[in-house]
Each structure stands twice: as structure tokens, then as C-alpha cells.
Figure 1 (cartoon, rainbow, N blue to C red):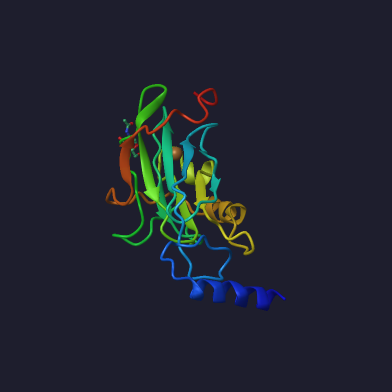
Figure 2 (cartoon, rainbow, N blue to C red; figure 1 turned 90 degrees about the vertical axis):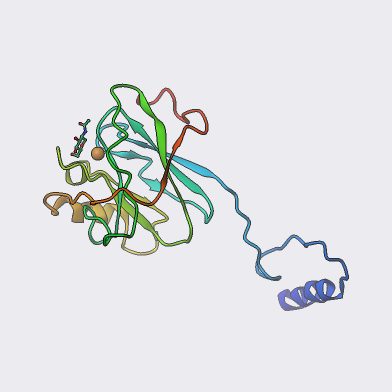
Length: 189
Ligand SMILES: *[C@@H]1O[C@H](CO)[C@@H](O)[C@H](O)[C@H]1NC(C)=O
Ligand SMILES: [Cu+2]
């Protein structure tokens, strides 16, 4: 029955002379990617040495945007197994340490666009206070919930990493001013 209904729909699509795109259901017709363009805000340093939320689920095409509280934090991309260490030079992102502000939050945010479904792991590379090991100040976008590569497991690895490595170059992502009101204006500021 399922197969015959697919056949019916395909037959209808093939028979149609209209060039108007047909809204797709499931995978029955050639897929189109619908970019939702959602922006996910993460507050850096809310509640201490944390990214809040530390776990983000985003679609391809979404933006993840980090807002910085009044402390000297940053974020850099790592992989699961090496939580407090950047990816090889020239890859991954590093926001730099230019988001320090005396009070409130920095008017600039750091943004990346999600381009695929791979997990994106990151950490705060602030070595003064060992944020990555102590918080542990770690975050992930699109972790694979069905694997054992979870943020909780990564935290255990981070505890034994000694001193974080600060990436040599600010790269990846982009700096932009606020695009919208702080999503949680009464929390943490
Ligand atoms: C912020 O932290 C970085 C890395 O430890 C350091 O190089 C920089 O001087 C700090 N900035 C301020 C304003 O404290
Ligand atoms: Cu930090």
C-alpha cells in the first residue's frame, strides 16, 4: 500500500506538465533543502565557566551565535577526543580574545553557519583558570546522541588534559553586532 501510494504520487508528478515546484513529503520526490535559517544563541560564561546552552541541535544552514558575558572567554573548535586542543592549524574556528568587556555583554557576537550534520565540538581556550578543564567549559553542536561520543563523556576526557592549547590564529566564523535582543536578558547579566 505504501509502495502503491508512492507510485501514485510519482506518476502524478511525472504526468504533471506544471513546472511549479511541488511541496515534498519525505523522500518521495527529488529532495530540496529547506533552509530554516534559525539562529541559536549561546551565552559564553553564564553561570561561570560554561557555555549556556552547552548542547545545541541545529539544522544545516542555521547560525550559531555566541554572546559574551563580562569575562575573558573565547571558543575554539576541537574534536571529541581532544577537548582542550584546536583542530589542526588552518581548520576549525577560533573566536580570539577580543570579546572581553567590563560589564554586561559585549555588543559583538561570534557566529558560524552549520554546513553539515557532523558534530561540532568546541572549548574555551582560556588558560588562566583552566576554563576547559575546570568548567569544564565545553560545548557541542549536533552531537550524535546514539554514540558514546557525548558531551558528558568528553568532559571526562577534558579533566585529564592539563593545559589548553590556544589556537595561533583567529579564524572561521564571523563577528557581527547583535541581530536581535538578548534571548535571555534577565538571566546571568
Ligand atoms: C584575555 O585572555 C587572553 C588569553 O589568556 C590574554 O592573552 C589577554 O591578555 C586577556 N585579555 C584581557 C583584557 O585580560
Ligand atoms: Cu572561558
